[in-house]
Amino acid sequence: MAAQAPATNTENYEKIEPNPIHRTAEQPVSTFSIDVDTGSYANVRRMLAAGELPPKDAVRIEELVNYFDYGYPRPESKDVPFEVTTELAPAPWNGKRVLLQIGIQGYDVEREQLPPANLVLLADTSGSMDEPDKLPLLKRAFAQLLPQLRAQDRVSIVAYAGSAGLVLPPTPGDHGGEIMDALERLQAGGSTNGGEGIQLAYATARQAYIDGGINRVLLATDGDFNVGVANQQALETLVADQRKSGIALSTLGFGTGNYNDAMAERLADVGNGNHAYIDSALEAQKVLVEEMGSTLMTIAGDVKVQVEFNPATVAEYRLIGYENRLLKREDFNNDQVDAGEIGAGHDVTALYELALVGSGGEASDPLRYAKDEAPKPAGAVKPDELALLKLRYKRPGEDRSRLIESPLMRRDIAAQPGERMRFAAAVAGFGEMLRGGERLGPGFGWDGVIGLARSARGDDRNGYRGEFLQLAQTARSLQAKAPGGGSVAAGE
Image 1 (cartoon, rainbow, N blue to C red):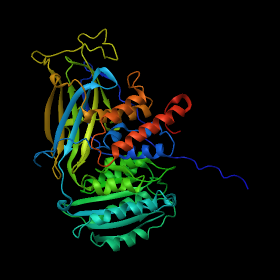
Image 2 (cartoon, rainbow, N blue to C red; image 1 turned 90 degrees about the vertical axis):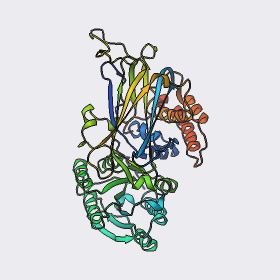
Image 3 (cartoon, rainbow, N blue to C red; image 1 turned 180 degrees about the horizontal axis):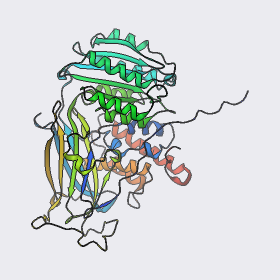
Image 4 (cartoon, rainbow, N blue to C red; image 1 turned 135 degrees about the horizontal axis):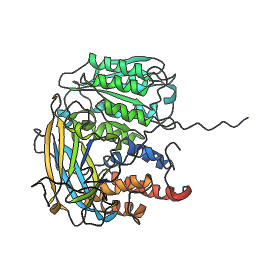
């Protein structure tokens, strides 16, 4: 018998061009939308556990960093839905540069105090889902969610393959047996009509819509859409139109070999939802049980960050990650421009690397022919200010954004990074190394990443930081064995 050809890997990732280093005098303002997705971390973990280095474009550094809880202070009241924390210290990979950590912590809500939820599970039951890590894992994942649901909640199930169908009409959340029976009836087969499934899911969500409640479609798929509305732009338009009705869409990615990460991540973005990748029942427990509030309930929408750096004190800056969340400067004040959402209890982290004026840490030279590297209006020189941090957000149901401003002071630069920053820097360094390590200082490398992570393991009640340490060691070993000792190029 002829040997069977190995299955072709058709996994799809959006191309990432790493953020450049900007000279402050030439471009002092940095603007981006926050991102609470964590799918990249679990997907990278899946590949490393299988003995494979991930493609560069699968590594979204902000999603790696945001997988972890950093214990930021919580807001004192719900009047402002989140508390902003900053830390400044020498960058662990280059002592001549400074790391800025911005932490945004949302207020939490006890599970019993969550508003009533109207959840529509949109389950991909196409033939490509007939693998142990796809539809069977999807069933196990949602089985873990069922005990968390209450009588006031509503659950519906829509399945899609060659055509879409309603498997379970809106059903009270405490009817666990009935919901589980419907889950167990799901069978994989046929091609994938994702567009029709999304339309039916939204129609079902509108039928059971709860005013003042949580209204959300949970799309569980490997993203392999090949029938119906298969054009990604058309799907994005469909989802963007539906979010205006108050129904969010989150995506849960499953499986290997044909996983369409680019589509799953983008649909969640335009659907005012979040994107996670489920590689195990333990990850389902984290996303759907431990972080149920942040996964389902939005406490602040269209959250944007803008940092204006002071050219008198900051020569250069670089935003680490968030490449596909960058916004134009004018988008910050435009309430019509969509941005990211924060869920109950969620925390979001962003990292900037800075070179201070006169530090010797600059990566580029000033322009020879500029009239003034740092033109400053009279009275504007603030020698102790590094930057002005601004955040905009909308409360749920509001159309106008609110503004928070906070200056960042040079005197607040610590002599050494604290535990919180060391671990965030270790995760960012891990991502940088998987992407080739060009942005890290000479001599830092995998030993630097692992040493930082060890020094900042902390309490680690859930074991996530210990697992990260093991992943970093695995990645070091795999990269050492790879041809040229480098990372995998996109698409390989």
